[in-house]
Amino acid sequence: MVVDKDATRIEAACAQGVIGIAGDASHDEVLEAACIARAARVIVAPSRDDAAALIVLSARRLAPAARISVSVRAAENADLLHQAGADAIINPVLLGGQLLARAATNGHAVDYITDLAAARGRVALCERAVRADEVGQPLSSLSTGMGVRIIRAGKPIGWFDAAAQRLEAGDIVVEIVRADG
Image (tube, rainbow, N blue to C red; front, side, top):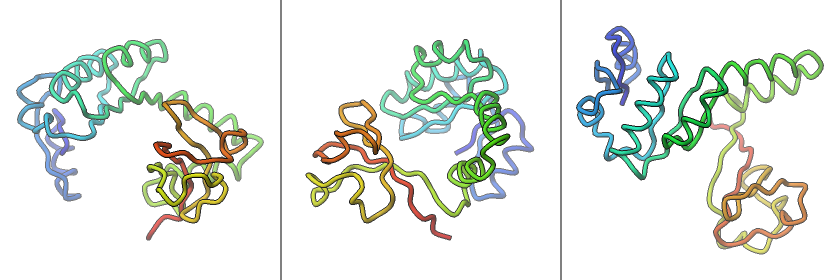
């Protein structure tokens, strides 16, 4: 489901097989028409941070269990968006700058990062719950992909940390997997 004020963008989304509503996502009635209360995930990417904050506040109130990801333009607004209820805050300008700086000396690494982030890349970075048959095993023993991180009780554990030598029930595994397609 896509909500946008621009009917041309709604038409483009519909051409890709996505349902769209032309309207202002900062208005509750538009979010309600989009059935946001049933949403598991919400992506907020308006052109202004103040609009993003208002949409995140409304989305959090109308869909309290949804995971909300938001794009922020000014780094100083990231904390405000977190306080508004965003779960993930992405600053494309900062991320792009970091990739540009790294590309100056690590072009192949940046190519791989781009591949990981691309919708149709050769590899994907995924997360999933640890399976029962993996409990007690090291992160490096995963057969589904290359384990790079564990999230345990909300805290990240790198593949290089001693705690990564034993997966526990309730862990979330972050792994690089081969993309299908």
